[in-house]
Image 1 (cartoon, rainbow, N blue to C red):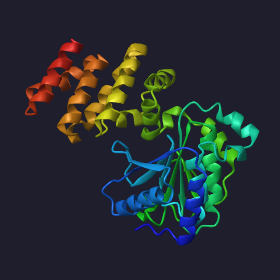
Image 2 (cartoon, rainbow, N blue to C red):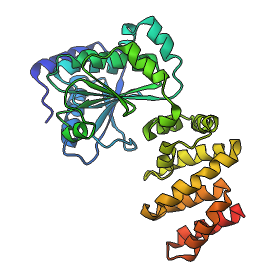
Image 3 (cartoon, rainbow, N blue to C red):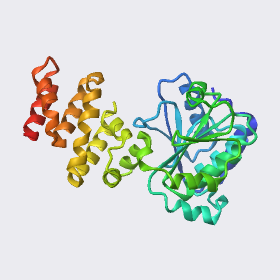
Image 4 (cartoon, rainbow, N blue to C red):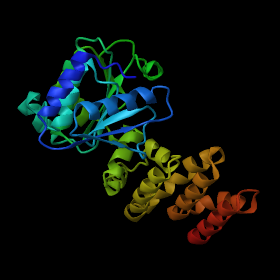
Length: 323
């Protein structure tokens, strides 16, 4: 059971009484040992604040159980004690904490054109964490391009270890830049603006595609004259919906810059053997769409080899398209 204290319960009840409309609290489970605690927290929120409607999200592409607040704030943490106040504020009002962001920083946020993925690691008893979380939620409230994930480093110690986090709060931008302790909002946003799109991770590119901007991803690659390494990850992603979005973006790239699009052949061929048959079929489709004749020897070997019949059929179609 999630350890909601009597004091936290009363705070949730009072907050719930102030709601004028129903609020949907989405959540997901991931076959993780902590699934039960997250489900318990969600159920108790609904019991304590009847206007909170809960909905399980079965399509979320996350590896840990999570709570979703709006479209770009994720809690992989149980927001209790000190963290309860900012959580309730943002759940009740998506613009909460926006007024804490200085006007000059808000003007910078408007210029961000690609998603900035920010993770903040907290611990339940960290006295400085709520202020950092509130600042990040303020940035997210001011820009749809700022995506914030709040992670409890004690609850998910493996994730903290993977990200080399040893203190809280720790803020990580795009898995590249990090701050431990106090974070200046202006400094953080300046770094967001100065990023090279080619360095964006797969999650950032996927976020653009899932937000309906597959053309924008293709445009960035065309402008840089480079197929981003993270884009290759999307083309071979195990989830079909992610691959589909990447393929739509790739088709746009083929139209804009056929020569650049042909550059997918080498990296895709290099990973082919490690993929399952369904992903292999989609990869072969991409090779065919690339129009690059350099892919023909590989495709002919696949078509003549001992592989799944559907993969063979995909290879035959790709060969025909290129020829």
